Length: 179
Image (tube, rainbow, N blue to C red; front, side, top):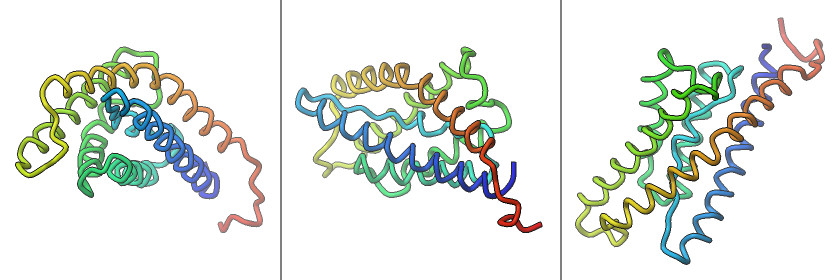
């Protein structure tokens, strides 16, 4: 894959993730009327399969900052956790290539649950925090987020696969590429 199509894939994936962030924010504002909050950070750990390692890391950092912004979390909270999990799993699991396997379903659920517990313990340590979760609300939010993750995971991975194949098949003018 040449550089221009790799940049286009990064741009398309970042735009898609931004739209997905806006959609989840819209869902959260709708669910907030009944007291439910949805957080799906493990969905943004997936990157298009043809994206280079460095660009995958850039996309994950972008997603982490967007999660921090849209969910009003401390700056760097999601970035640190997403980059750490990405670096931990990139050699062992090909998350974005095989979305039919049981690993590609259970691993994001485990990652999402671990994010929720980290965020729960973080909010419990802040005594002056006005948005602490009580235990029942925590489990309801975790359950709803896990259901949303299961619902969104397969279409999300298919869209990333389509982005990869479309950007790989783009005709690139050879005069634009330095050799």
